[in-house]
Image 1 (cartoon, rainbow, N blue to C red):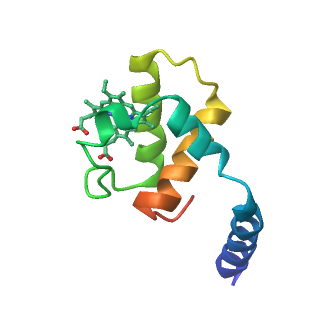
Image 2: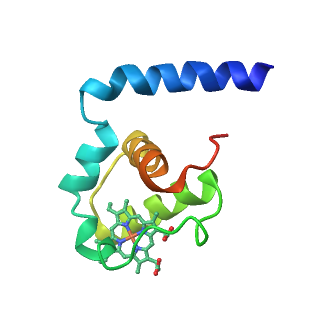
Length: 90
Ligand code: HEC
């Protein structure tokens, strides 16, 4: 019951944010992630949980030295999750 309520709120929120680009999408473009990941598609099998997704975004962020803040990494992970991974959020 509690969980489905959170889901409804979550989808309402992402729906109302639909008019503007997701902040994570903007970060994804400005950090040029597709430079590598166009040929290395994001793979939900390889990164099977939301926690791991956040870690991997952090990993690439550190490697690239983009200097993103933690909340930006979280937004980026949220965007990738919506677009590609579709993992349940913790
Ligand atoms: C210089 C090349 C390069 C760039 C640029 C890059 N990555 Fe990666 N990324 C990798 C490599 C290498 C791996 C790990 C090995 C693999 O997945 O084949 C990886 C793995 C990942 C994974 C987990 C793999 C999967 O399929 O689930 C995610 C998520 C990810 N990167 C996100 C990002 C994000 C977000 C950015 C932009 C901030 C980014 N990467 C930029 C090279 C890159």
